[in-house]
Image (spheres, rainbow, N blue to C red):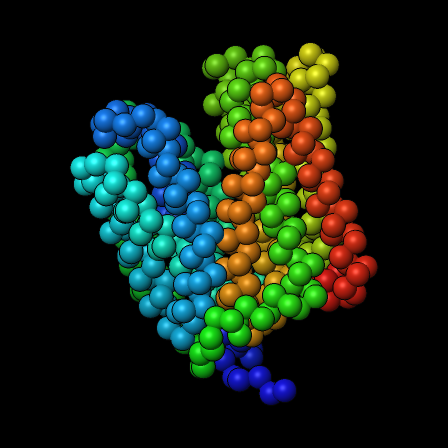
Amino acid sequence: MTRTPSAQTPSHPTGGLGPAVVLATGTFAVGTDAFVVTGFLPAMAADLGVSTAAAGQSLTLFAITYAILAPLLTSLTAQLPRRTLLAGALLLLGLANIGTALAPNLGLLLLTRVLAAAGAALYTPNAGSVAGMLVRPDLRGRAFALVITGLTVATAIGVPLGLLASQWLGWRSAISLVALLALAASLGVRLSLPAVPGASSSAPLRHRLSVLRLPSVRAILPLTWLGMAASYVPYVYSVGILGELQVPPAGLAFMLFLYGAGAVIGVSLSGWATDRSTPARVLAVTYIVMALSLAGLAWMAVAGRPMPWLIGLCMLAWGGSSWSQTPPQQHRLFEASHEHAMLLVALNASGIYVGIGLGTLIGGLTIAFGGQAPLIVGTVIALGALVFLRTTRRAFGPAAATS
């Protein structure tokens, strides 16, 4: 069967990493928007006259909307020029945040969070796939890593920045600054990114989703759910877990900083290693490191023998392994089907939020048994991801193993 030529699969990508750097500014805006709210959630709830739990629905709604819309919007906008699409997505994100800053009640605020999630769902997966198109094949892993670095940096500093900004300026001013960041990133993408046409032909969503029947794709996507779930089973409760490990309040911020620093280091090393080795090998190392770091924290919690240096090392490794999954996963999906690369990267981005939601749910069910319980469950799921990786490599052959 002859494949329809598409701008989504350039024949001779020769560019360096410059476009990926530009695109990373956009993912930083998206990540800041997603994580910054956590820092001023109590202040926002008090201002709106609702409980913190009710205001927290904005975070849940954002994640659900993102997970649903990422593959749908990517398919529906496949023919749009990529630069226009990416700049427009960040523009929508910025305008939605202005709406959030002006929202007089919770109902309107939730509506603006849905719009913000739509902008994020349009931007992040398309930014990753465009980065993969514009660079040489030997730089593709590092390009994916650069784009994801925007998210990981936001993960590391978004919550404390949100807390400080809300304390100094108020939460509405803080979210306005996020809006300005998104609008500035939109302008940067529009002025700096080279023109990339959209797909030359359109197809119904059912036809596009038929790519899920490819054995290599079925071997890849579930790993995103498993890996992110393993990491996020204990993550939401990390402050309480660190408290059980006798980390003093003054040391909590430092331990969480180590997690964020590990995320930034991990995603960078992962992109480099993906280009030098095979994505499947990088993932295997990732799941082993994740299991060891969570198991180390669990052992100290069960044995009642916390060691600050080991806690810090485990936090660094935990953060690194959490976010080092994405570059090799995106690389595998890109190679599994160049024709449907954007849709597959969108499905992977959706899968990240599915995994986060699943992990958070499991964590909530296990935390009642003590801080060691989510850590043990996370360790088991990480080992399960490693087994799944090994099994699917054998089951689906070279395509799953090396792509």
